[in-house]
Image (tube, rainbow over all chains, first blue to last red; front, top):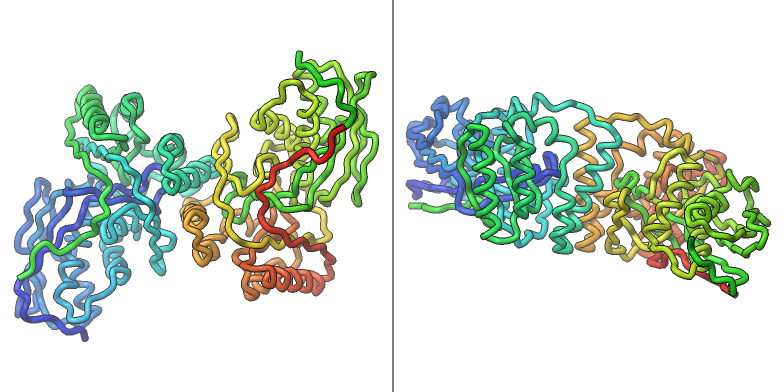
Length: 316
Length: 316
């Protein structure tokens, strides 16, 4: 049984939006964004119940504690640690759902980080990751960590192994990320389901070369090489139809100087990297216009790749 | 028409043996060895014929100029450049054939580097690579460059693209390579033929994670990470049966401190990396003993990863 610090009345944690896959790192690469993210507040209850008190979100999210990812992971953790406590949970979503920006990860991670602050002996981030993975499984049917890990650890991360979790922090390039969220819903579960279970050896060799070149480019700070390397020949072609005019949008962004464009996570959001703020603004504008041509409205965020992990923002 | 320097009577070039694939880099990674390699000498002939004058080798190699890789690439190049010259070719093989040590690449590369010395305006290494690829195609039925590139450029190389050829020189780790050649013949053509044309998405993710971690380990000089990363879940299992007792040999080498063990190229040679000369000697001994247990004799070379490219050793 883990001891709870009973003098704490309320903890709020922030967890950032994340961009997973990064074109060539399906299920293994991801990075955290600045400022955009979810907030979860936990307030202890003496009736040992876990309830969702409020959700502030543009989207409709489940209040059922077995279906909401934040409450689900807290429940699991409370059970496993045999904690004699309940919580009222308040969720403030900054990340649209089914957007490919790691919304479910951020809610789970924020809840776990907030919960950890109540423990006399906090768990390690590696331990918390295992619970966040259960949340991903709830939402997508699959334990993938490429949003969870950058959300929990910050930065640009490579997941070398899932069980046990082994994380490599890669050098963060001096680039801006343009994240465009078309107002289309693609559930992660659906986005995974459509993927073929097999791929050709030929495509594997091409993608391997791009992945290896991408890692080399990050370590040697070689942006022209990174630009050439960020080409996904395996996953992106299978998901391109999620966004009307995908290839036109991509071409337009590349023509405006983008250092790589692809889906953020399983989409439909798209990310582009840019060498400076001016390019980033321009690329964001052009991508949104291209979507508009397809009669799809969108939101756009411009952010550095953030080395800030999920963290406590308020504790009383 | 390219001009030939007619004052040269003889040129000898050396091209090193190479270890391709390096467990996680099928068709894209390879490194050069020290000292072991092939020598090719070219002497101009005024009858415009290309003939193989002599071959010094433990193995039997073709004298037919259309089947011998050294003469084949020289013939192609002479034709394309419309060179008004012939050559007598002498080949001294240091690399056993069908060993997985890049023997055909070394003969082709040595021949091309020697030939280049006769040109008033030498070709670039990138141009020569294209001809060496034709040699690989002759021998294996497939244009793979993972032996050619480290042979031609030296060092530990990543092939980012084949057409056009784009090469990344990776940081060379401070390790010894143990190369064990069991006296078994496996032709590259056969070794490629048995490979499945498809692989599972699951294995792809695992191998990607290992490849990315391997590149990260090289740049950050993280040998423990490199050790974990050098695990091939795709190609090695399909070729393990080439060498009796493969997994026992591998286990024994790892137990003796090897930083990764797998096939060199398409096998049957095996490479292991070792942290120091003492470990390397020990690992080589143990691998040879294990092969002996399976009634397979072998040769063993111990070498640093060489940053020396193929080069001219004599010119008169």
